[in-house]
Image (cartoon, rainbow, N blue to C red; front, side):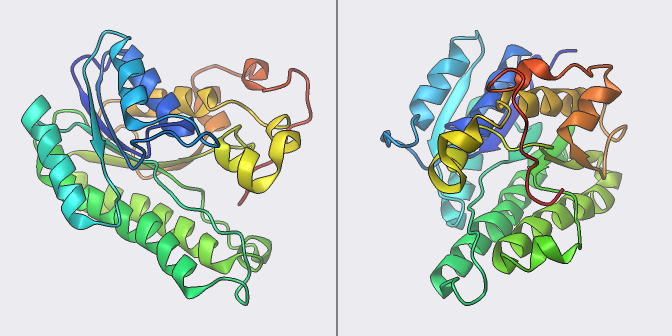
Length: 272
């Protein structure tokens, strides 16, 4: 399966899951747009849009590094314009940029509430909105949003209502776009990991090295994304996928190679 010559616009692609997906799709021949905020490296996080783009180009494809804060619609519009100017169009949009806030109602400042919704919800919506004219022209149009199945078990809503709302909103958009854009030939799906993934967020915000060692590497999501995005448009749309299920459908059931620590007991991710 090849994505040769396709153009992928990915938000938050300078590190972690976003970069892993970018490199996987680059390896399949896609040109990659790294649309993210980091232009100077933060030692706690690692990576910039430029270092990620350099890794992509080392795989023999073209990359574009563009600084974008998706809270700013003008920056989104500029990034889309730069993408089209360089590559002639857009085939795939990956909504990976997201902010996390695991606090209850009393301890969620209004500024943080606004931040996570302006990135996770409004930003995701506007990225797709601005990319739509070009997705409609593509012969292989996909939207992939990194968000979970909608699970109304109160244990996922009660502890951190604001964050849960924002992630479920992302999933509702993914499902809604599958219906809205079907006649335009645009597939839309969501993807979420069964286990925690070893990222800067896990190490710095959630559980440190202990949780990272109970996690899988970002490669599992990159591989799952590849299989979803390689499908002919509309064969695969309207799903809220779990990475393990995507791989199982491809006949891949031995997932041991994705564990950060071989044989470790894995920690189930949020919302599952």
